[in-house]
Image (cartoon, rainbow, N blue to C red):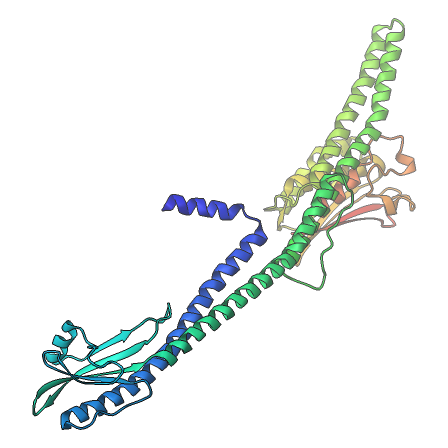
Length: 458
């Protein structure tokens, strides 16, 4: 039983979705229609039987009274039959239609003689048989001894009505089932049409289509529409991921070309003619500097890619002052050697941020201030209403005005700094950290130097 049931479910599960839906509707509607038809038939049959029983009981009472008084037996309704037997089953009086043919079997005669009432149907509803009757037999006590009064009424009108009802119920149920199956089929096709459209769109994407978006209605909010919006968001993420990959490859190839070319030139010059130990050492120092630049550039690009492809940062509560002290500590010696002051001003507060990325962002800003700015460097931070406002300022000439609009673009560098160290990714990394935290980054000139501000929820 379980094996056949499992095979049936497996077969059903292999059918197309529309077919499964239509079959489910058809089976459910069949059960509902069968139950409804059975209920209607039962109620109508009960009403007809009650009427026929009432007529038969009335006729039986009149016959019983006639037998008890030895009067003439009543004719009764059209087609009615009667018969009077003694206790041994001998026919004493009978309707002309049955004459001496006994309507009761010997067993029934014995049962009635002992005081039981016998009821029996003669003929069947389906298949159709002639002379269908409903029979009743009672014992009647008379002065001449006990008698058995038998009455019967024809069931023709009742059976014909029930057969007509069965035919009408079958026709109505069949038409209703066909209509419900058709409506279910059309509804299922209409409901799944967007899914098929989405499937064709996905197949087009698999074939290499670009910038594909599914046509999702904007005036609906059902399961299929929400599926379309989800797929479109997935396509947006896929496109953004592909764009990041292309940009990463383009940035890497663009920025790695120069140091690699310099390395090749240094090595070619070193190999072109014999060199002294001092010249070789100088070449190796130059090569080492370019290798370090490649490492820094690769790390910066990888950090940017990791930030851009991460859905959220790993936040954890921590002390704000400790975070900032750890961020500026590696730069204190460089600042002292340059004769510049580097201070941190932060209120004691706990912030919920990703300390790893935020330390790197602050470190980048301090490093930029040491490379391109002058004077004292101040790192300030304050927390108010669940947001942290962090600022790094220096006392230098500030950003060139034409550089500010593109300060956070990748590889963007002011003209004065193009020949200095750095890849132009520092501020881009800072903005990526701010965006990953759900915040913003802003660069400006304060009149006393440059300032970069991070506004983050914490």
